[in-house]
Amino acid sequence: MRNLTLRQLRSVQAISRHGTVAAAARQIGLTAPAVTLQIKQMEDEFGVSLFDRTSDGMRLTTAGAAVLAAANTVETTLRALSDEIAAVKGVRTGTIRLGVVSTAKYFAPRLIAGFQKDYPGIEMRLKVGNRDEIVSDLKEYRLDIALMGRPPLTFPVASICFGDHPLVMIAPPDHPLAGACEIGRERLLEETFIIREQGSGTRTALEIFFGDHLDQLQARSVEMGSNETIKQAVMAGLGIAFISAHTIAFEVEMNRLAVLDVSGMPIRRKWYAVCRKERISSPVEIAFKTFLVKKGATHLPLLGRLYPAEGVEETAGRSAYSR
Image 1: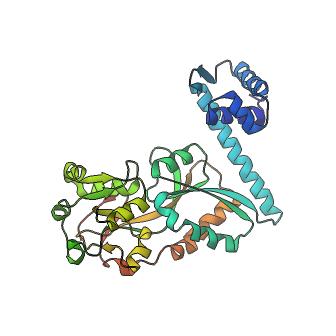
Image 2: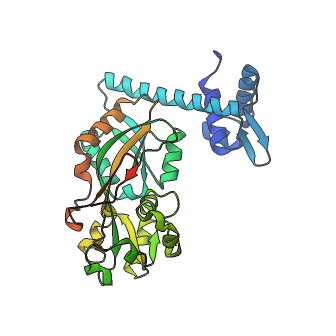
Image 3: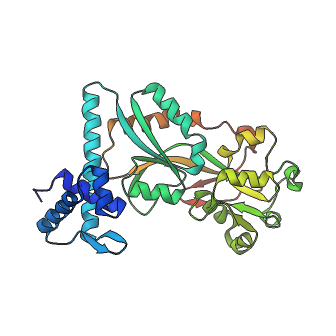
């Protein structure tokens, strides 16, 4: 293993990402025969195959997956070393690959702008996706930090909380429930729900809220894939929806949406910055996480006027819905 090279490890990463030698070669600037040679040298070194050659492309074997994990760790360590050397030299530069769940895209640009006022030399590469996509990218080392409502439990992560995340029920301002107080679950289940896709953290929170009434919820639900589509559907009168309060500040202010007074809501979750636990954070990542702890909450939408002061806080992976 002492003969392994960075070029060999990057060849494994590229083939895993693209599925073919030709596409991997284009990414890393080598010829296809050169990439094939890199893989053959590694397989000779280890005495096992790293890829299965299938009609659908190259697929990692168990040994190949272990090599890929090591390659990702090496790549991350080298990036951290580069940033640390820059910090020692007094240069405040570097790159952060930041992933945010789709709900966080409503405030992520403000967070980035606020951070770059203090650190103008740091480049932020932003990826927006649903929860499953962001968790997958974090697991596969394609992200340095992810902003989300619930840290994943399927692999070791380190997380810090940087702000509150209230979830509320919305309807058109002229909806019969818009002026009602203490609306119960049973009454809500008489309405049509516009809900997010499977894998969304917001949908998971809604399903937890309704508990034993999931069959009724499913029967009354229409699935849509983005917060913007859901808001437009509610404004058009197609149903009510459960959504992050951080996504609706403008529409409520313009009287295009109303927040319903539902018993047990808002559900108060938290925003977390999450990274892989075994990674060594670079100086620029540490600076960003410090910024989030100190100033992150000030860049979230000011929504106190949108919903009642009381509500339910979701903690430690469980939700208690008594007021």
